[in-house]
Length: 274
Image: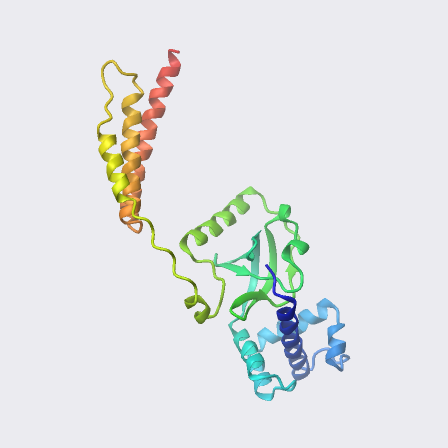
């Protein structure tokens, strides 16, 4: 879930050059006379410059135009895309093999790569989620943070943790996890395999389920259990035939709930005279 060393080296080469340019333009940290000296600055000083970069986005264009380090066009193109930055507070919700999951205050979910150090080396999984102040940037079709993270010393209980988990699961289910700010990268994704057509199997199951009958001489639980089977198959048919028809799916689910309730009532009655 991190960049290669080569890409991380490139990222910081570009980032620190931009920082130093902005520092010079805004007369920040006057005691720092060279980019090498800037690299040795404390994190608090770098945060001052970092914040100035995103408060004066026009200076990114000025850097590209003046190009004091004489970067190639490809490198300048990477820096130009940083104007698409997303800054603010994020919940670090989970650490996956592919990336770390950052959830913004507007509930957008981002897949973020680390730079030199894996997120697992910086954060203990057992303490997730973390609330962080960060800046997310595009880099070679991926999303990274800008190298500086500020944490909040806040512990979250089950309620917030469960809510964040649900936000992630909903985004995953809907295919809404943002893994790139680059439209070309999104279009380059492999198309999903066509879903298997389960309708013939479900039609066979429904025909069989319709033959299930409770009644005189049979255990009382048979009839409600068989209704539950039919309602469940009906829900599966709705899901297969039109998964986007939420009204039909909710109605089918309500039938399943009612059938479950009837089974539960039957079992409670049986318990009373056991």
